[in-house]
Image (cartoon, rainbow, N blue to C red):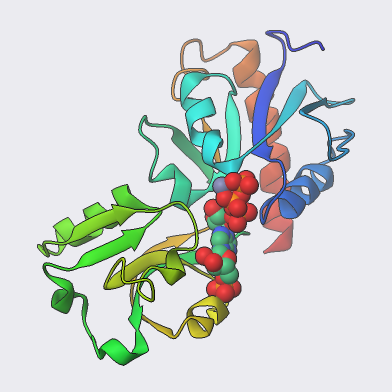
Length: 221
Ligand code: PRT
Ligand code: ZN
């Protein structure tokens, strides 16, 4: 293990929806590394970068802490972070929408009708902000999984959850009311790592990495 000051550390999702596209982006950018599933990290052979494989929920925190200098994670999680991280580059994959949804049978047609109601979500910060901005008073219940089941279980009147194809909503007899946030994967950075000394080795490495990633993203669009 040679995680020294002359390389930067990038945290990515170990095993989930963003993993394959993230590994492909890094490889297309010319980075060479092993990525066997059991690994906790890889060191690039041809670039001063170490890749840490972690749960996506931990990525904003690791980056805020400086455990990792950079991360690749959904903007939906960046907005929930307790401490600020800097968003450097949207990556144009992992697209999804954080949506307010209600049971079809409820006949609720506008978010204003949810005043005084319970809302179940895994995204309490973003949800609270959305309803506050609208001046709608709601009671937010945070649950970590199977949010789509909350109305059926009598836990909440509505949910705020991620949607991509919409088939999960359909399957649970839910209909979308309004979009709270459009999200995609993004490269995030510790707000101070690259600011302290503009000419530091880490800043030089980051700029080279950004050039490579921009090259891939621009070539795709
Ligand atoms: O294990 P780990 O904690 O790392 O992963 P995870 O299970 O918490 O996250 P994961 O892999 O499910 O999602 C990682 C990121 O992918 C999310 O944070 C989003 O940024 C992004 N993403 C894109 C999505 C979806 N699309 C998505 N559809 N995350 C979740 N979903 C859920 C959705 O809520 C629904 O339950 O997938 C289900 C199917 O969605 P539909 O609309 O296609 O039916
Ligand atoms: Zn997760």
